[in-house]
Image (tube, rainbow, N blue to C red):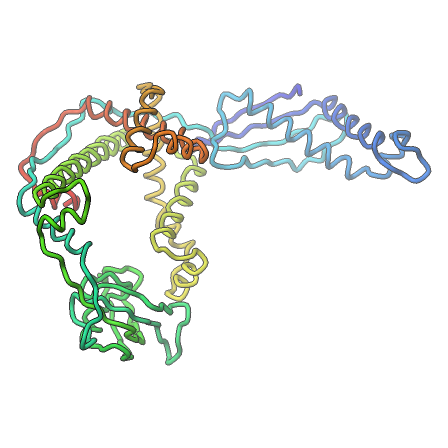
Length: 448
């Protein structure tokens, strides 16, 4: 299709493209559609394929024009994008403004506004200084992890008498009351948690201590402005709580038998301790590496000029909302109902998340630009080696894992992740590490 195009670059990596389709091209498309109808339509008084064009036009005039418009628009936009210097960004559909009526033989003009790939002016990303503490896994770290192993292998038995104390496992029902009526959307049944951990939405550990199995109690709690759960900030909540059961926890002894129960690869408690040490060391190294990458990339983002397509921000907002829903472990519809009951609006939350989404979008664009410049690639042998490593870790046959990855279209994703990690290694290799005192392992892992 022989169209002409006038391109205007707008702010935030947007493009306005004014497209003119010559009248003869419009006529050609219109005539082709009319012929198609004449050859296949069934009209009373005419044999199939023998309907005159003028009869068909009188019969289906507006419909023929609409189909011509749709067909010309699709072909013209497709051709324009194929030849455009500024390619459309993949995260949003273009905005088409085509208010002018289409007529065979007459030039047809319309506009397309779309986001394009922004031109990123990168700041320096090599030679940047990274601060990193000295550290060492000590007996305190090993002891803490052994305590966690005991907790994970604890036995739970019904408590007698069944009265809740700190450290017990409580099974409760609860629901909010407002003006003497239940707020059914907040009802939670058979909720199980360890009392004293705070692993419950309303943080009612202290309030239920002393309650017995079968007991129901109304609890009113006022949450301060700095409440840990921001959904409850400055609220007074009345809960009706019923205790279904109470169990107490018994920790196993730390000995060779416990080590053997955990894994057949451990023969003694010392074997278990050595494995814990190795995993802690790997975790600290991974944490420090991630922090270094974040430091370098954050500085590059700050020093770069990054036009920000709105569609990319919207994509990041959608991703953040999906992450939020997944973290709550609730059905999205139920989550929205619960938020509404608390006076919270998902649209307002989306607005609150926008600055973080914009920062994530800038980071994505910076990584993409650095990747293009450094041209870090991944060989097929590296992908095969990674599949082998994953198969060994998951105790699967390499062939089985590879077939599963291929079936779910995940091999390209795996290769992309490897490419990204190689890029990070490449960036870090060009940075300068400066030691800054000593930190405890737990502080490093907590990001303190």
